[in-house]
Image: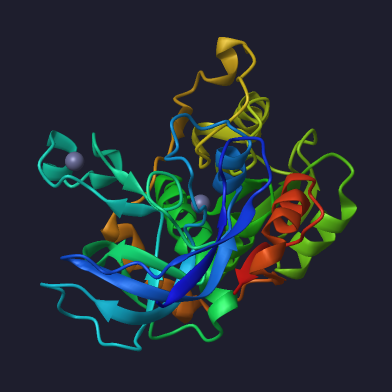
Length: 330
Ligand SMILES: [Zn+2]
Ligand SMILES: [Zn+2]
């Protein structure tokens, strides 16, 4: 019988273990994807580290999947065998709750999330709901576009929520920020990069993408910003970013988990400053980003790890040893 390999999380705060499993079947409406690359997202760390509640266990993490269609289930149309596809975090939605019906499927009451509530892409194969997969005809190398599937898509949603201002701060210059900085600069915006205090390697990395200023998150930018997006999971960055934005400015929290936000004086919020979070993505966000990214010439800086070394990739991300994105290749 045909088989697959997967890196499996049996319990939070334990290492992933390699398992051989029977090759899954694509059910009605599903596709079986032969994984070519799967990005390692900070959300995977939150799952592995037990910071997100109620994962399916055991779970195969990974929601930045690039692969080829290996089989299609009954009723699937629009995907050819061998076609390159992307599988994102939003695995499925109910389609009937008030959020789904009002175009806010990212807020669905009963969603399915790839690599969290259904098995994901830290594997040689994955099954996905075809309605939530995307053809990937542009963008080049499989591993280099894997981070588009979450850092790009949810980063894009965060970026849109940040508004149309010309000056944009990015707190935490990792996978999402290095993608969105390229889009923002291509659109004529001025980008300010904030890193961990004293992380000059990350600041140099940001400058290489053309940001106008890079410094530590404890520093004030050289001019007030129209908006800031916080990608780092650090609640103390919320008051820091509010200090950095001008009246009417927006502070968008782009991550799924953050440490507690310390109390701060109302004067930081006064002046019609906004603080908001971005949750998940809609398929519209994905289609928009997948159209924009090749035009903007987005290039991801990736470090490749063999699938069996997923634990090492997670550790490197956790400890800030990476520039850009980690990607697993089976
Ligand atoms: Zn719903
Ligand atoms: Zn993600």
